[in-house]
Image 1 (cartoon, rainbow, N blue to C red):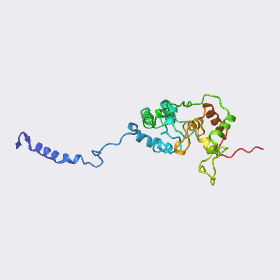
Image 2 (image 1 turned 60 degrees about the vertical axis):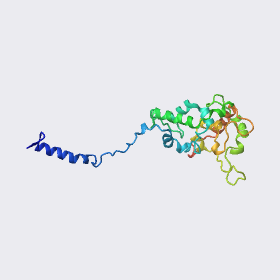
Image 3 (image 1 turned 30 degrees about the horizontal axis):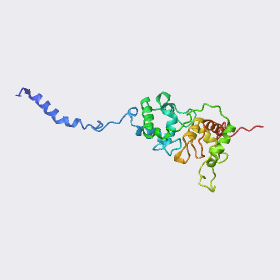
Image 4 (image 1 turned 30 degrees about the vertical axis):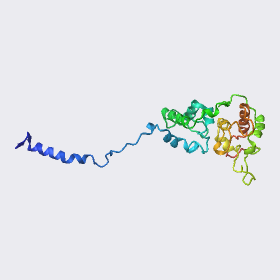
Length: 248
């Protein structure tokens, strides 16, 4: 018997395939119709990349972290996009800032590094506020002198960080008792010379520290900044946190 050109066998095949086709989409383990997980290297959203890679040290919104504030127009102005890109990609060898670019052992593509840098500048830079000011250079170019640095430290820094850089001890009769030591060997082993210079120039307004224009009545000069860094780093020890060798 044939129906419209189909034999009985063909008819049964057609009926069976029609009955079982809807069930194929519900096979256990088959991906559903929802969105697929984006591969890590395809994430190009600044907020997502910043939260995953930067917020832990620099703060959720670029402020309030242990490391220098990135939402600081002065820091962004003095560093510039090229420096930000280089530091983000390569990190600071031997210090807390890791390399993020895949080419330097990190996990981010060059495109993702660019997204981070552009995002910082677009969201947090404010070049107008510095238009009438002369920024000190990002990197030190002048010869340093720790002796002069100690004198400059006394003028610009001692009122908050103590006369010897050891901070204000608990119980001090002022509002600065929570400021810690900036000559502690462990602290100095974690921060680079450039990190100290950047903080002196850009300040930490989130922690009450002014930028290089200071609260001392006059701004710090490039030479004073260079010398203060030299004095602070002269307090470094060779092996912080380790037993010192005993000399006979």
